[in-house]
Image (tube, rainbow over the protein chains, first blue to last red):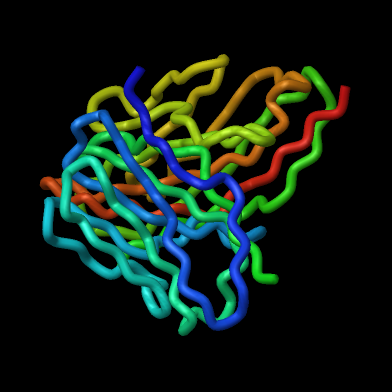
Length: 111
Length: 114
């Protein structure tokens, strides 16, 4: 079955540590996205990528970094510069003007 | 800049009650509109979408939405809710002409009492 796989499901980070969240899709979608979901704030766009080796900042990119070396993969690194990283992170993919498909999410917590 | 407003943050209904969730967007051009649902412990899934044509669109599980261009609205409706409709609902907008960016509303948490 085609879909989006996010891993891990739960992730714990120590203060000052960078962590990387994985997102893989086998839907052959051009675009991939990272959102952050906080209670009462909906989904806020962190980064998105329309094509391999290119990506754009979303509304809350500070403290995050991404790469898009392969069409299928769009990992997100939460750096130590992100002051409030505890959240639920969602990865999505789509083609232009089409509905997005979402992964199951990664819940990041700070120890 | 595009934005999406969902005015109802929390809604509590009894089973068999009718549902209407508001969604307004700000964007002057042609848009694609979506409603997504997130059931407890599950990933977001598409309820319905509007691209063009009939402004009344029907989705899964008996949901429908009406696009009113003059009001920049895309409200979600269901005539009779069930306990299993308890979930969080998100409205989203995507600008036309090959753009990839989607804007989401803040979501509405619906609780249906059995």
